Image 1 (cartoon, rainbow, N blue to C red):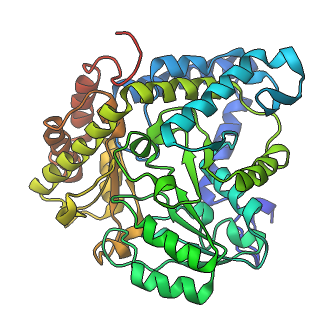
Image 2: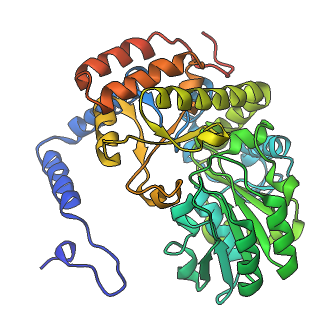
Length: 452
């Protein structure tokens, strides 16, 4: 038996699945049948095909992604992608002095833009992902044996800080904040009892599935009772916060906020940590560098700064249109027979919707949409807390189609296409052709500095 054939060991770590082994074996066989030049050419072809497909042929409704403007994307091709810099802008430890004169200004500008957008005094801009940002916060500000209270994954929290995620690996005792059965709503009364009983070192709210604001002021009062830190994971709602169209976590009581620089922020993939507390910032900064990151991708900071500048200019209008579109799509989907959660509160105050079909299971819902080039994702873990629902639900989002120029009247057409796919009213190839024709006619990305 090879290591890849071995069953899970006593720690629960899984070996490669049969599907993964089969796929990797097939790609290895392809490599054996082509020259290095052919491999390189194939990479070019696959990249171009992917980019054309995403730009011209899909309705992308994946909440974990965002549409980067052409100007920001072009900066990712910079020579800076291969260069080295370590430390804080203006006081780098390697390399020294003039070698950093361009990248220091770029990094410093990115930090300044984040401060302006989010109203934070201190910004740690170097984590490679939001998961790394969350890990940096935990490693820096907790110790083994501490208790961590989290928004559970089943109620929309992120797996990176959850009960079976990273925290147990560093010796934390992890418990869930109590939720009602309504759209990820925190049970604040039960939370008070839980906080007083467990006396956590830290609480984390926010994460992957977000429809409505959280009661941060009440949570901060509970945190203060027991001397806990309150952390807000804004991975999915950064733009709405920056644009003043959602709650402002740092102003409402969060000690720290973590953030994705991609997703709604439409920059390069990365994470940030924001705080007004100089002590927490100092400890976190020393953890991130040099213990987590040394050299890094310099090109992504220019791209992200470009995207953040666009949000200073256009972000408020973009965020308002996202929310209007999400609510319009909720109404339109309900009108054609889907169950859309959060109806009593207007379906959503973010870019996300959670949808179920009365007959078609979530896995089949997802598969039928994907085959028609409507990119959605089922969220099986959240089913039990969406109005007491059972079985999987599907998460849709509208930030990308909004940046492509769609407005609330267009949401009726989007709902019809989803219905066509899920209910198999038309063949997938026919729906895909209709989507390609529509998307390719939309023109340049909106809410950006890009020229037509």
